[in-house]
Image 1 (cartoon, one colour):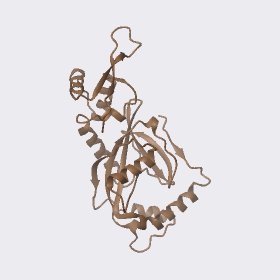
Image 2: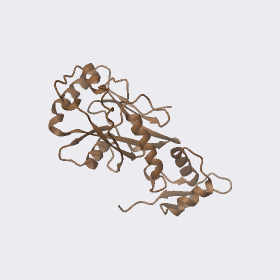
Image 3: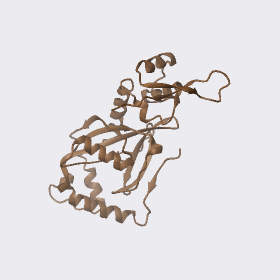
Image 4: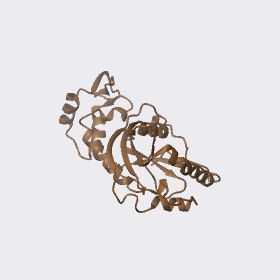
Length: 259
């Protein structure tokens, strides 16, 4: 499967990464709140598959969820919005808080410290970056064709991965993805989840395919259509899908919210 990705050139990536992360660690304590971070799970629906955006720092052997820290004069939601917009290049992206990762074991394996040691970064004493962090987790839904990611900070690579084919992930990020997917399944029938995933008019069958992939079960066509129409979140278009010899299914789109 072809994956969207971008990489720094091999000639300068290592040095640039080390310099950037060293500068970040030196100044982070003055800018961000201690002990709290943000992780985001960004979903897309592409070529009939649910995908998630992952990033990699330097030449680390694992991938990470897009994330960051909370500035001292910033709310959690504002921090999530800033991180999402910086990572995707989108302004119209809406985070939904779903989980707090606060296990006592999540940072006790010293993976961060080992990573810093490998990069020759000095974490002396009870360093801000070495302390325990809890992570407030948000998910967001987007059309990946609209995402404009640029290599910045200490990110060396990004990829969209099928939800069932995730690579090795940092710390508890795999658990966070699983929690996000569980929350997404709950939200399926309570809000217009497909609004930011279906980027053009769709048939009811195509919408059902999205729901089946997220819900991981086969849905009855008649019951699904009745449920979707009863939620009053879809607008049926006069235009029908062309290319069918007989009955052509109606096309739909999600109603735009005024909020």
